[in-house]
Image (cartoon, rainbow, N blue to C red; front, side):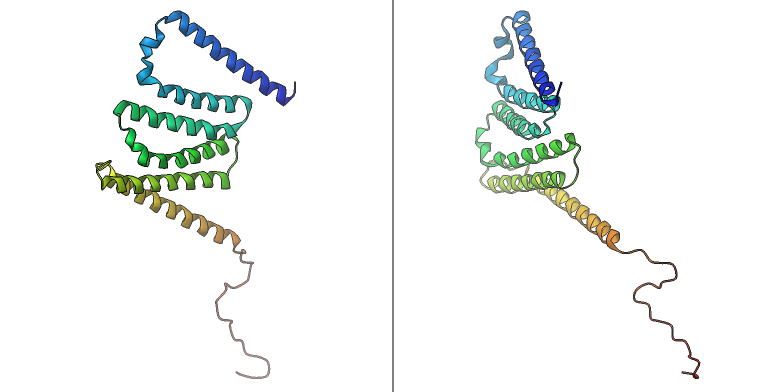
Length: 205
């Protein structure tokens, strides 16, 4: 069985298992809609869709599915918080978290695919950008009374993240510079040392 057939089999197996679990829940809990109270818990469906995509990506060997999975899961988390608190106007600034969800998805995609390098760094940059935007928009709207209490904490967090990011870049550049320097050969003198003057056979200097 080739890789494509194996992936298709895994997808169908996951779908059958989910359908079976749903049917079992309907049998065991006849009034499941009243028990769950979908008017309050419907954002969990969005989170569940994200988890399903992530599990599907891992199962079929498609780590790229981690990106839409993280977007769906993150938006589902925002919707759950807004539905619980009633602060739907917070979309004015919480949308800035979506690039961070994309960054987390890129990082997971690279880690699941056993890849290191530019992909992970790109995901971290998106995550940092999202945090900075979120802090900036939250601070701005705190001035008009939308989200006042968390602005100082967010500013401190952004400062710490930026310091850590700068330190990581500095350490990485230093390591690259040391890797590019040629090793000193035996008997050679370090660059910058003045040559030693020796007398010649013709007489003193």
